[in-house]
Length: 462
Image (tube, rainbow, N blue to C red):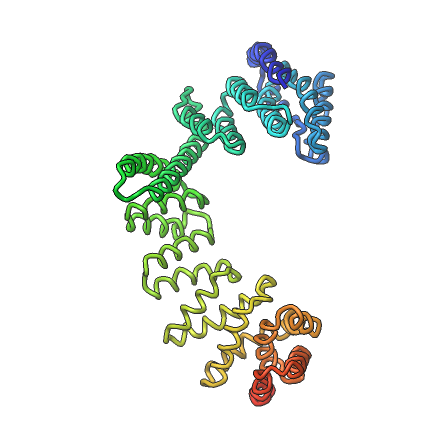
């Protein structure tokens, strides 16, 4: 592995000299041609290789290195890390190429393949990984911050949390002309992930406090450290969340910090903005976090329902739909009772809910409630069923499912059978099989259920 890293060092000087020469000789026509030429990237099938423009030919050197890259690709796919490392020693010679475009992209290709090899090679160590990252940073400043961030991820994966934190701190203070402005997004990410590590340290201190006695002198010292970490993390996380995007881990940590220090109004404002700001992409998790915060704070039922209604529109199969159902049930509004029926029907449209006993119980209870109520509510049920009567029987109420449900989960079958009987009638195969098996097992609930369906089946009511 030492040869691989040392090869980069020896190639760097030659690469920089060639880059200076090629920069002087670049004409507009040559630049256009260079940008049109294709480089075979690793981890992509060869059929995705960019086609060569007509009339342009690669040099023998370029063809050899392209073949070398293909061999590295094959070695990576076969997890042959030793062979990949040996081939990389040869491939780094691509930095001697006088093509401006190749010289610009080669460092990133080398970085991505090299880190993959160093991450998996049995004889690699953290010292080599650090040295390799430093060489790539000095080789191509245009990817400096990206390399810093990805290197920090690799250190975290290897368990070197403190080293990763120091790398992010150094990267955050990096300045190199206009490159800082051009790499502003990467800089924001670095600040954000440094904030996450501050939160991680804060969390460890919090656990220490919980393990100490209430009057301990050490507790006061740790509390001060916690507050210092809180301030650092708060500034970094806040800056990242301001940028429109999906920032779930950052938001969760930020809100946890705010709630711990009882800054509830700011936490609410952050979550509300994250969920409803039109500049941010649609994100169901944002509404989940907002609802869970409202629930923790004991907000009104109306406010909680409002948050879950938006989630229902985005993800009708979300597990929180049962909570929305319960909340709607507690209201007196006719509109909410109609929505409650819609929510449970739409949840059961999805395969992931087919064997959810609680969901079937909710539907069965509401159907019984509707059958004992006004014609208006019966019309709601009729409307929901009419859109499903062509496919729900095979999806939920086949004889095969009846046998499987009875064998694997009798409670599920006991809840579904009433729904099947009311919606499809007493001749439904699912209903007949479950009632027959229930009567054989001498379970008391099946006889009155059979009687109820006889007088309240769809055919009787239609």
